[in-house]
Length: 393
Image (cartoon, rainbow, N blue to C red; front, side):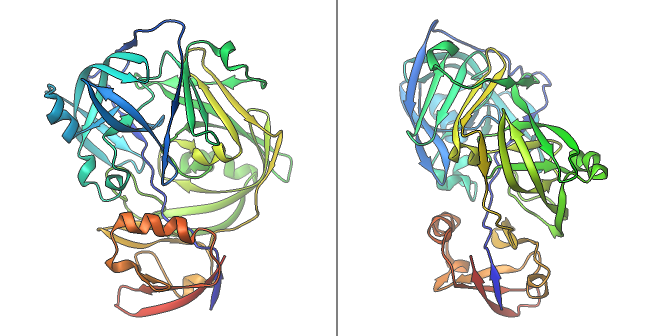
């Protein structure tokens, strides 16, 4: 049996912190009239930047969908007071109570960020985040008084307080900053085949793979207008949040004829729903142009061609991690659903024995196999029956 397209693991790093007695709006930047260019490392398509705290250099992931985070290892090295705690929701709406700390100084390049608040998490022992070898996240609350430009082709970010210095040639759309975390939300617009229109307010989340995920809450509002074409429905899990995979739920695979982001028209956008309360757009937009997120003036810029036509490639299934196993998360294709289902363990991809590989090795395999065609996938179902399927991309 031949099935086209293998959709691989998506890792989402969004966090939403409930304020309680922790003020993420605290902190400031020391410099005035600054413009700092910082080279970043791309690790499994995530943005990793160098950060210095108390003279020690660390590797932090840039995540506009989260507040600042440091690892437990960094907490111990810096001997910080972690007496505060806070309730946090991850991208799958899983909740944990975790520590929060005040960091006197964080340096990024020649910039000095003072009195910053950060959450504390055991990143070293997370099954997937440990693969990035990071010491923390730079979140939206650190950038709240600045302007952030991301250039993927140059692997560079620019942090400044002078929008004119960036010499941007496109008009902006507005940004709304929510909560003391200053989570950045923008509008994305849609026009369906029936010419009906809709607008979704979405989180710009650099911790998210992919282009766009719509919350089930928003989709329920839009559904009656038939703006989105329903391609498939599936019961399962599409993504992994910081605290785990969550419970299986009914998800919908959709396509919209026209999406508009910051005056850029996007054709053939395929997306899926999410149980998160918030819709979001992710890093894949950087494949089509530079993005500038102006926290200071509350503007968003997308420097791209005026029109983007995406490949009309419908995913057949998605994968995730459940109970430390690499498994089928969702099955979109009806024929494939006769062969595999949610929770089936992925045993082998061609000659690679996935069941014996670490999750870091699986992430490497993802990049190698992303554009491959004609390979075999072997799965083990809940009855321990093993099946091998031919895959075509």
